[in-house]
Length: 91
Image 1 (cartoon, helix red, strand yellow):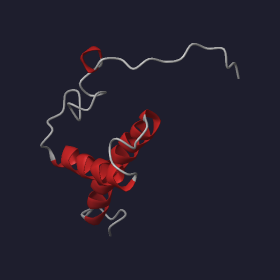
Image 2: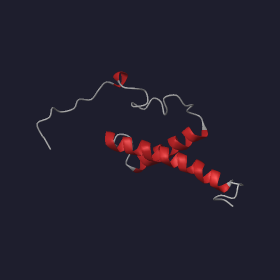
Image 3: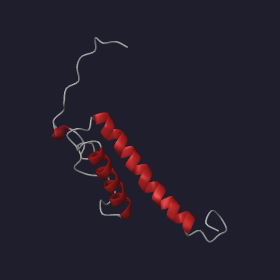
Image 4: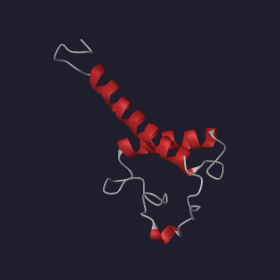
């Protein structure tokens, strides 16, 4: 790995997307949908577990966001399995 690369600089929040800088949860989705609230709750719990937003690195924040999205989607899949009446998973 090359250690001669220039150091990265922090960009001003106004030059970043609202999703990236944390102002919006989703680019087009409604932030009060059940899915978005599940994602937000999971993200907030994970950030608190890691020591708060000041202690979370950019890489950790990216991982937390992905994990929170997976968790929200898995909850919806579990709900679908539980209510499946076509003889599938929940039968």
